[in-house]
Image (cartoon, helix red, strand yellow):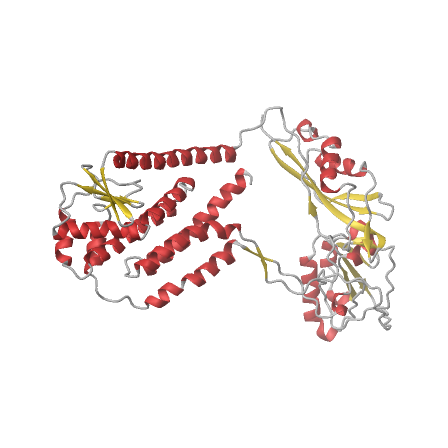
Length: 529
């Protein structure tokens, strides 16, 4: 995991923990189901940590017949730097700072634990059932830590108040509250930059006090116990690992002791954790892959051409459809009356003059027009067309899930036999550089002139060149075209290194070697001096 990935992960867990804490604050805080709230807060810590690590592919429709790689493959080559010295990596420095602070906080916890055991070492110890009772003169006593109860000698354990305090601290030991506190403090130490974890820790400590207070009072005198709390001295226990009786929000503890009414919709408030989890998972873990559904093979045959004979009595919707296709495919090749033109000329044609409108997409466009048809092809004929409709022969036709935008009142696919000499954009076994991706990257590192952008005056940044090219049946590279130009000679250098490439392993379709269209990207990175 890179430093950027870790920082993004920190952001995700912060948002998730904020979501869980927000619901707690609205629906669960200061309610009497303390054991559930304890579970909820601990679960919020764990789920906020795990959910961003989960990955689900959801909402997928029927899979395409051929799962090839017609889409662009983004490969980033090692790019040039302006000088041998690397620039300052802010993300890496931030990560180091976070780790240093985390280490200091963990050491603080260890020091606190060490101090507690030093107190135990100098205390009079009495072994009781399941715990050790330490008699001490420490000002912070009475308090508990794991199975140790530290009792202040000046407090009588025989009077009513002493018995309640003793039962309070014993509840912390029986309920294993120290483990909760150590667990949350470890979270806060590692992910200290997340403010919601600190709030969750504070709320969990208060829940511990609610549970212990409830056990201490039971059916006894609540008023005397409340009076004892008011008379107690409250110190600063910001980062304590132990449970001290004289610590917590006194107002909330007194309110909880005197509250007798039941919470409305208590069951609903608690079960809402499940939809809350689903919301968190759907936002941070689900990757939606919406794919075109293939209802019938005939609906996905990309080797057909769709003709439209314009009916002037229904010109308005047809004209609107033509305009929409042109707007959605601004980069498509435009052929008007079998001559290459441009999109502006196509838009200026009066719909009344259009007799046939054809739109090619995917393999159809590249089969007919080569690399010029990468973004599709629009054909417009003016005059009176003759459209011959024959029976469709679908054997050996290649299924392509690329959606075809139609401007149509009637559709008439002609009889087509697809040869294997065509240019495939989707194949069962895509064309590959010999040796795979690692070998491809090694080739780029060895042959790419990474200083070319710097020599042409490029400033610090990333310059990505998207390439499209043909790999024929012999593995030769042909028709290399740059689909964009970031400038600073990056396009020319990317084309040069691609044309210099050794033979590729050609694509295969149904076990036969075929010619295919491949897209790759080469990224130049220029760093600061």
